[in-house]
Length: 121
Length: 113
Image (cartoon, rainbow over all chains, first blue to last red; front, side, top):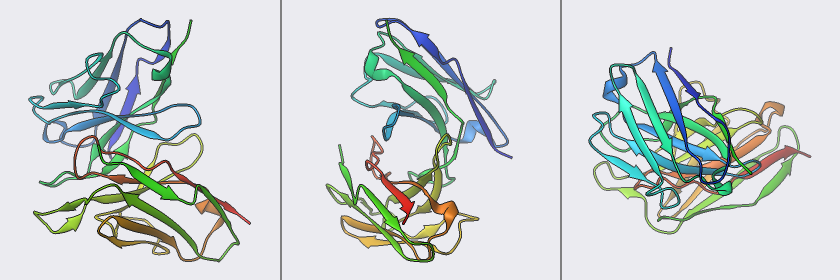
């Protein structure tokens, strides 16, 4: 049974940093890229970042490029999202998500429950 | 970036009636390797993460009731709930996964009339 569990959220001041974790189980973690998606309170979904199964390829949304870094440790079945220079507009629930299996780009069939990040002074 | 739009923003439908949600992409999302449109639909209920309903425009995810169907081509896509049930009250999002960033539509809120 696939599980994705996010952690590391909390309240941080503008300009501060936070590291989120996404712990995965129930599938061969090292075979899958992983995504981060966020949702500001009462708003829609925003794709944030992606890391390939090997960790060799990473993509970021323009809104976080240069401030967020995605990484993974396949020995721990965990993906990280290091967030720095945080802004109030980064306030959101952050979800990690796994894609459907397949050779092509795929949508997300499993999501974690999310972790809330609040950026406020 | 590919911009996804949805209409309407919200709709209220009587139980057992049809609900139709439209989604438009700002450019083609046709994946040439399999000649399918990289278009998915998600359902999100309050306090829950999104749930994948439909992918490749019209393929239902395992366990999704057959009252949910997807269609479309080019840049115009539709999610149809053929007979609305109380448990279908949610926000529905379309998403293109043709190219990063995998953008989402703004969502359509479906309620009961």
